[in-house]
Length: 160
Image (cartoon, rainbow, N blue to C red; front, side, top):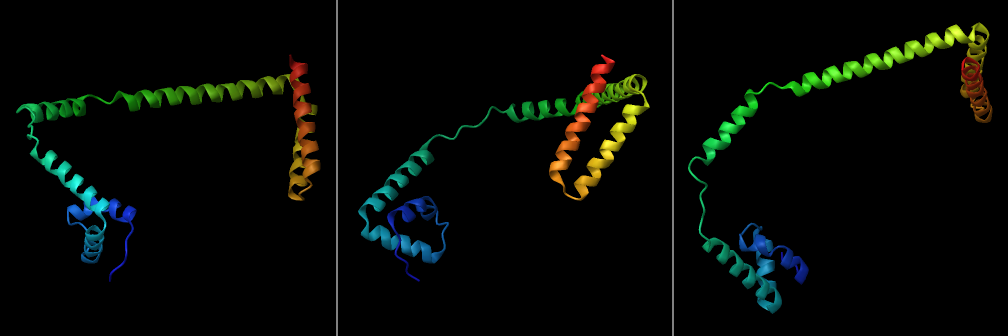
């Protein structure tokens, strides 16, 4: 099927055309376009010249021990013990332990300093927030959240 192609479509496919990588219909459409469009034909000539120049360049070969050197370095890397996993695991465990100790110490400090009244008040406020969030009273949830924050801030100030 013959489809008229514009210059940008042809130029985008010139390399594939040159290498015969296109299907027969597209090859024919581009050939027809190149027969009538001197600018695209000139682009193909320039592409042919560049390709011929590159093919005429001498082929360089890597030095003979090159492959052996590369493979040797790869084997060296594989033989080295992988300490990065062990180190990252140890660091992760240290962070987790420190975080856990911080939580425990914070909890112990609050329990010994604040007493049961603040704990009960906080529990009541949390229960209220949960109930209000279930009934979607968002303005009340915001107010209750602020109350909880203020209670905790006040208890922190009392402990200081």
